[in-house]
Image 1 (spheres, rainbow, N blue to C red):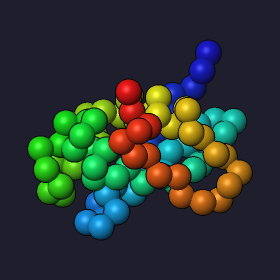
Image 2: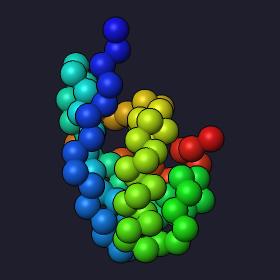
Image 3: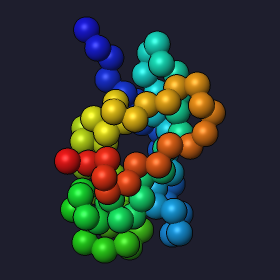
Image 4: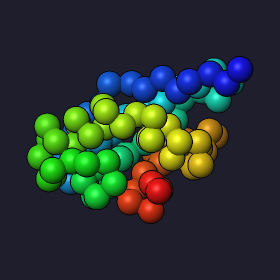
Length: 88
């Protein structure tokens, strides 16, 4: 049975979007940025406001997990950006 991703607490950075990490047994941690554009255009945030973007992050963690599965780079050591094109 596949383990679910565990998300760390999200931090909003106005010029970047939402910074967070995700962990999965067997894969370890990886750092991510969810852009404000992706939160707005694909995840339902009303605008680039902190509350709107963080709310979109919180209520769409299953969709974010699917996007991560498609992009996971477990040994890169670099932050992975999740942008508009990463969501269907």
